[in-house]
Amino acid sequence: MATNRTFTMIKPEAVAAGSMGKILDMIMDNGFRVVAMKYTRLSRQEAGTFYAVHKERPFYGELVEYMASGPIVAAILEGDNAVQRFRDLIGATDPTQAAEGTIRKRFAESKAKNAVHGSDSDENAAIEGAFFFSGREQF
Ligand code: ATP
Ligand code: MG
Image 1 (cartoon, protein in one colour):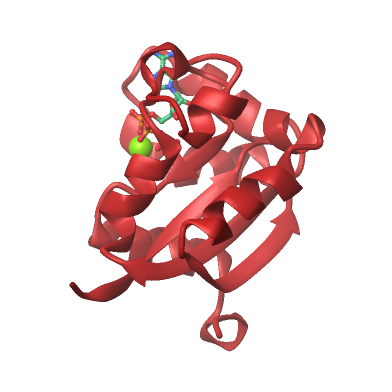
Image 2 (cartoon, rainbow, N blue to C red):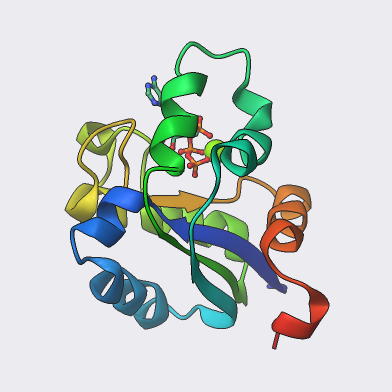
């Protein structure tokens, strides 16, 4: 199986709840290597750009406000079949639908405030990683 990369954010409510260490433990315990990581905060404009694919959706305004509401942790992760395996680890968008043992089952508050982001394709993983990190910041 190919080793490749995905991109994640620990979202503002999970950082505010003090869960970033536990979430990072789950990620690393599941065999993902950290390629790049930063503690940062998105402006509304940056959050809007990051989630531009959802701009026609009814929840877009709420999503942008939420993602800009406090600091996040952004990271590029590497592992076997990284995009799919990480989506499996985070679980369904709606935590009431997320499987036992997933990050969202354990940490998400709601479908909107769902603790973590995970890229949905190799192409988007590369775009999202480049949004946050220069080549100089990837190891
Ligand atoms: P992410 O892209 O953050 O990993 P996802 O791929 O599981 O999440 P998407 O459909 O891409 O889900 O939605 C992006 C984000 O928008 C969700 O993670 C959630 O924070 C928010 N969101 C999605 N659907 C809703 C909804 N119906 N109401 C409110 N917020 C929503
Ligand atoms: Mg998504």
